[in-house]
Length: 77
Image (spheres, rainbow, N blue to C red):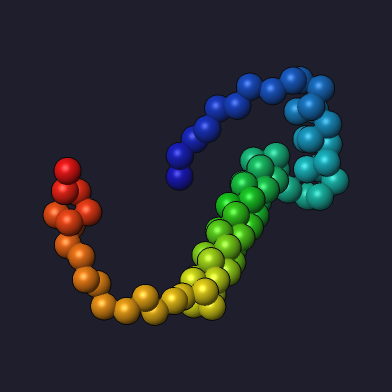
């Protein structure tokens, strides 16, 4: 595991430590859990967005027929 140093307001840290004590955990564990939930939620959201995008591609695909042009035709001057 990697250590991380954070700079925060003393009052915020004291309040967070009180919450951690009431929850019978540490401030480090609370931060670890928060970041884990944040990342997992972001990944789930990203996966859902990719699935929706792929479904959109599937629904809106069009058959445009055989290609009758070449790259050189498109870039001819």
